Amino acid sequence: MKNEIINTIKKYNMLGGSESVIAAVSGGADSMCLLHFLYTMKDELKIKRLMAAHVNHNIRGAEAKRDEDFVRDYCAFINIPVFVLNADVPAASQKFGTGIEETARKIRYDYFRELSISHNALVATAHNSDDNAETVIYNLTRGSGLKGAAGIPPKRDYIIRPLIETSREQIEKYCCENSLQYITDSTNLSDEYTRNKIRHNVLPVLKGINPSFERAISLSSQRLRSDDEFLLSLAKEKIKKAKTDGGYSVSVLKCLPEPLLSRAVISIIDECAHIKADSTATALVCRAIKQGGRVNISNNLFADARSGVFRIYGAQKKTEAKACRVQGFCKENIAGREISFELISKEDYDAKLKFNNLLFKYAIDYDIIQADTVVRTRKSGDFFAPANRGFTKSLKKFLIDEKTLSEQRDRLLLIANDSNVLWLEGFGASRDAKVTSKTQKALIIRLSSDLEEALDE
Image 1 (cartoon, rainbow, N blue to C red):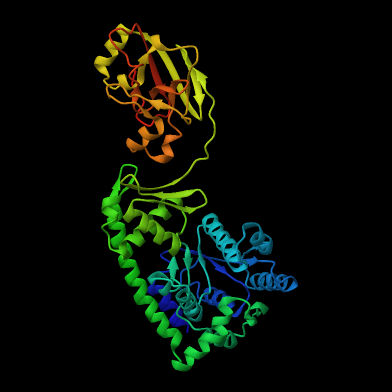
Image 2 (cartoon, one colour):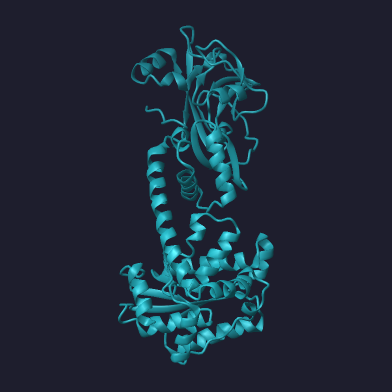
């Protein structure tokens, strides 16, 4: 069995040259086997620093404390450091409205990630081939795709699973041969949890059909994992081709076959929002890309394909920004944006315009400024008549027609008399406010965090 585990570690290049490993130890047979194996084989595996980690979920009261003490004592016996997290999983489950199992897993892996980073180490978990078979069956009952059917990955990021091709029967035999004591979690004996139902009621039937069922599942998982990784690599190539200003080209994405589009969507959401999209959200986003729609992925996170550019963004809470009076020389902060004004003569304006033809988008006729002229963000009822264009529209319709991204509309700054927009960020002056030959003084507008590049002096 030792040779089998070593071959698994080498096959998946689990250690990858790392000399520090933290074994996740619950105190059960699987994790005690893993810790003992790593401890006895650390020289051969070139592990210079072996540590252990234990999470007390505080679900089983005194029994959970017994498990913690057991792990502490064994680690002290073999003289390795152990890190212990005491987590109130029931309270966290109630607070976040998630199931006990889901909450415990999140807390556990968040802790492992912190340890991996702080100690520059890999984290070894004791998942075995039986666990993999249970996971595959569980995923299939939920309608999982290829990734779910591929089971538990032997290595992912900082997590390695040296026992992933070793059966629970082999593990218990190893513990017996090496006189390894271990503890049994009482919840493993109950069918209250889904995995236990599969372990106690489904796997025995499948083993009756094929005594080597776990090994067969492992082989299938390897093949399916390879297929999934290949499709994911193709999807990432398509993502690179679809990359454009502000997001990803809808025309490129919508032409992808479903297996590539779904993987592209999952990858983009993960990259942009750092969340794993489930199958329902993925399907809705794929449909939005094909039909040009928008999807609320979760809470305040949106996937939008309506403008021909697919993008992920969090909608900002709309707040009523203060309105500041426009004056010749001043600087104001509006909705987190800094805007300043400079008053110059028409002659200076003409001279500057020769060297910077963008200036016309950042200037208005100061002579038309009234006492109630303010700078602010948009509000209901605003209308805009852009210079050199023969129409007047509501500001809302104008921005929609100009394909201004919905998440940017409430950030745009404007100058207005009541509802009459005299100047609009990114679009310039209105017909009534543009600088003309009759202008005597021009007001130059500067933004410290413009949607476009700041004007040069």
